[in-house]
Length: 277
Image (tube, rainbow, N blue to C red; front, side, top):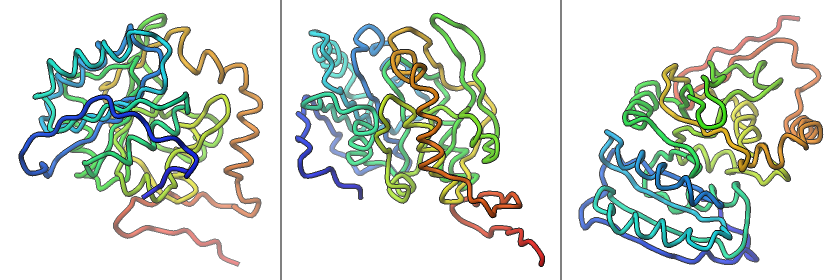
């Protein structure tokens, strides 16, 4: 388990709920992070409540939003819909810690063996978690992601595709909306704070570093909102060149790597290619 640093202040617990029944074997934990998305979060929450997968553990992390009514909006919705979920945990950071800290905090509180990550400005189609969970377990993948639909200020289809280390090293096309095994998150060391963005890209590059292959479900299950309040627009675009250098320093390509070695899944035999002398 990844432990918080001793100097990190403990989050404030705003709301908690748990049914007095055994933990479902197919429980999915949902990591929902929020920062100043009071206008969007109810739509996100409604999409989670509408999931066809029944057993859900909802963890909401508010990263010290400065919108005055944020907690009231979330609390009102949770009070009305709490029985939809097996378990709910609503925490608020003492000060703004960034998405990596908030996601790691959610994983630490997750009761399920697999965790789905979503930011409060995005939404899901009703069968998203059911289909991702089936793919994760049937394929024995360390994580599974799907194709996206873009909505909001731009409409279209996302760029998700089969996990290919050579292509991913050049450019990220895998969004953080994915179902991830909790033990894999711990094995990778969780999310790392990257100044001005690309924490999700850094996380997927860790899969390559550890020779792990996430699964791709080529179906539009998740909806990504395009708007000018997102961190991508606020910070990451202007810092693009610096972030590219950071990624190369953190995940360098070995100079003697002459052949492509396909990444392994978390279990099962792996074919290795060895260059002859």
